[in-house]
Image 1: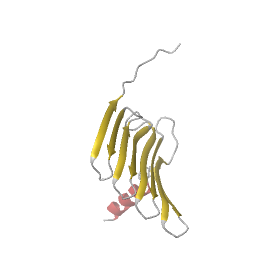
Image 2 (image 1 turned 90 degrees about the vertical axis):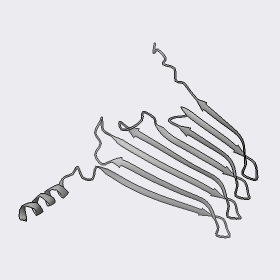
Image 3 (image 1 turned 45 degrees about the vertical axis):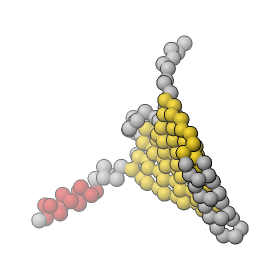
Image 4 (image 1 turned 135 degrees about the vertical axis):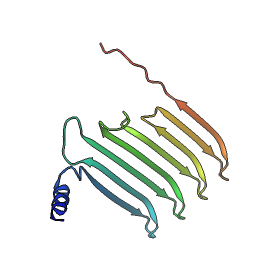
Length: 145
C-alpha cells in the first residue's frame, strides 16, 4: 500500500503531467442602454517550457457583434497555431458569418488551412441559400534564387 502511494506521489510530481498552460479571456463591450455590443473570447494553449523543436501555441479567438435589438450582426472564429504538431498551417480555420437584422444568416465564409480551401455561401433575408462557391487553391513550389 505504501509503495503504491509513493508511486502515485512521484507520478504527480513529474513535470511531464502538465506540459501546457491554458488561458481563457473574455471581454464584453456594451451599448449605452446596457445591451451587449461585442463579445470576445480568447483561448490560448501553449507549452510550458520553450524548446526549439517542440514549441507549441494554439489560439482560438471568437468575436460576436450584436445589433441594438439583441440579434447577432457578425460572428467570427479564428484558430491559429505555431509549432511542430498537427497540420502545417498557421491559420487552421477561419469562419465568419454575417446576419440580417431579423437574425437570419446573410453570408458565411469558411477558410481552411491558410485559405487552401474556401467555401462561401450567401443567403436571402428569409434564410434561403442563394449562391455558394467552393475554391481549392493549389500551392506552387517556387525555386529560390
